Length: 437
Ligand code: GLU
Image (cartoon, rainbow, N blue to C red; front, top):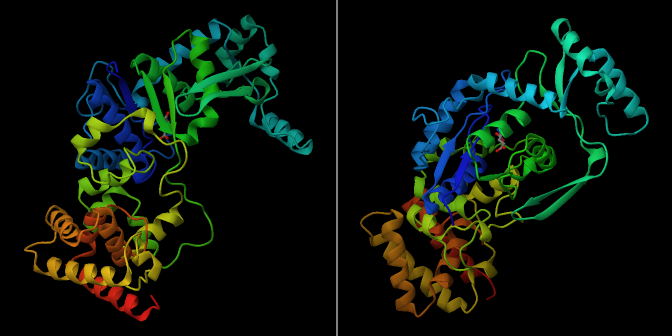
C-alpha cells in the first residue's frame, strides 16, 4: 500500500474515551505500516463546548498509549496550525469560493422565520429542513445585503437526483438529494462549522483516508458533495463500527464512578491498566487477525493491521452499559461463572478441576504477577496438561471474570491482582465441585 496520510480529529468537548482511542489507533497503525503520516487535528470550532483541558487530556492519553502524531499540536508540521479555531480565515476564504462557483449562498433568514419553517414542517409531519428561500436571492443583491445584514452561509445541495458515496467497509451508499438539507457552513459570526472546516482541512492536509466512527455516516453524502463541489479528489472513506454509545437507558447504577472511569483512557490508566493492555483490547474491538490470536504488541499490530479485515459490524463492546457489564468484574468480587462456562470444549469436570488446581499452585508460586510472567507460565501448563492454550485460557477467563468474553486475560488478571485471582480460582473449583457435572 502507498504511504497514507491519515488524521485523528477529535473535538475537545469531553473526556477522552476508548472509542476515540480506537479511531486514533487504527489511523496510526495504517500510517506506521505504510510509512505514511498520522496527523492530530483539534476540531475546536464549537466554542461553547470546547475546552483546552480536554485537548490536553487527549494529548496526554495518546502519548501515554504510544500513539505519536507526526503532525499536530506541539510537534507542528507543514499545515500548522492544527487547531481549527486558528484556521478560521482559511474556511471563510473557501466559503467565498463556493459562493462564487454557485455551490453556496448567503441566507438572511432570521431565527424567528426559521422557527416558523420548522413548526410548519412539524405540523406536516415532515423532517424539519431549511426551505431554501434565500437560494432565490440574486447573487448581486445577496452580495450587497451581506454588507449590512446578519447572515449565515449555506451549502447549496442539489435538489434533484441522488448522491452515491463509496465507503471502504460498507460499499456504495446512495441517498436521495432531497433528503440532504442546505446545511450551514459558516455561522453569522463568521466561524465555520465542522462540516466545512473538516473537509477543507482534509483536502488541504492531503488526507488520503478518512477513518472515523460511524456516527459520521449520515454526514457522509454532504461531505462528499462538498468535496465534489470544490473539485477535489475524495479520500477513501472508512466508517468504523460503533464502539461506545452511551445508551442513555435509565439511571447509572451505583457502580457509576467505576463505569465512568472504565471508559476513559486516563481513568483506565488510573485503575492500573498498562498501555499495552488497552491497545490490545481496543485493537480487537472491530478488527481481528484470525480467530485465535489474542495478544498483540504495538509492533505486531503495525505489522498485521489491515483496513480490509476491519469489521463493519459491532465489536465486543457496544454501549456504555455493556462496558459496565464487560468490566464490572474488576470492581466486584461476587462474580459467579456459570458452570458450563468452566468447561470449555474438550474439558471434563475432572480435567477442569485439575487445571484450576495446578493454575492456582503455579500462579501462587510466581515471583510477580505481571502478564509477561503469568502468560508463559500458563502456556507451559497447558502443554503439561495436554490442553490447547485456548482451552486453559477459556477456563481461566470464566473463573476470573465470570464471563466468556473479556479484555485480554493476562492483563486482566494483573489488574484484578494475585490475591483476588487466586480466590476466584478457588471459588470456581468450589462451583464445579458443587455442580452436577
Ligand atoms: N471532530 C469530529 C469528532 O470529534 C471528527 C469527525 C471526523 O473524523 O470527521 O467526532
